[in-house]
Length: 196
Image 1: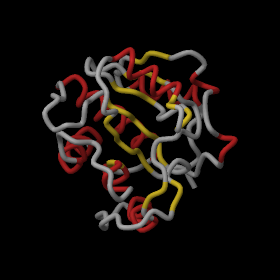
Image 2 (image 1 turned 90 degrees about the horizontal axis):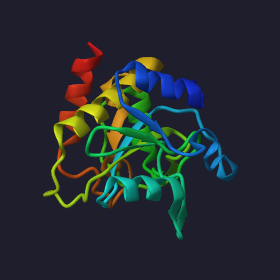
Image 3 (image 1 turned 180 degrees about the horizontal axis):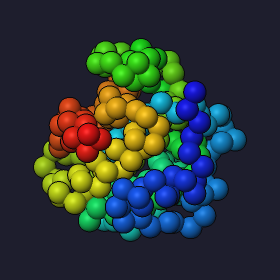
Image 4 (image 1 turned 60 degrees about the vertical axis):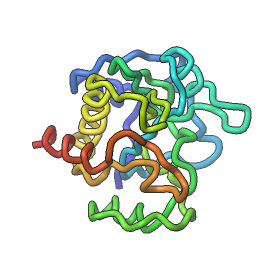
């Protein structure tokens, strides 16, 4: 069963993929492990932040909100393609989602519709939040999409996963729309090409 990468290894894997990485504060020990287990991990989950402004977005994902403490992901990918590391363990990003979707991710099969919220996703997924308003109009610069592709592919390669281990929040939790502005099938095709 795949154990989560230690923080230092997580950093190295991203850098080895050619990503520009910024370490935020004490990210390596910033986590929510006291609220539940971290691992086993089975995939990568993609989100949009519904915010604008890199500094503000990174701070929000590190600190969290009054109703949801940080970290809100493991890495924030800003519009310039930089990956800002904000969490080194369990993070508040996935929430409860569909156990059938998790089983499909583990089996690397086509995802079923997400129609339940019965499984703890924070335990099982790395999370990347991408700086974007999520309104369908805010652009996704090529540098940002390429960084997301590289980050997901780096983790897939390290764990021996295919592109089918990368999902969007909208594929996991009923009622979610993120990421909005590209399709997950398009992203998975890019990741598959990079993994070849």
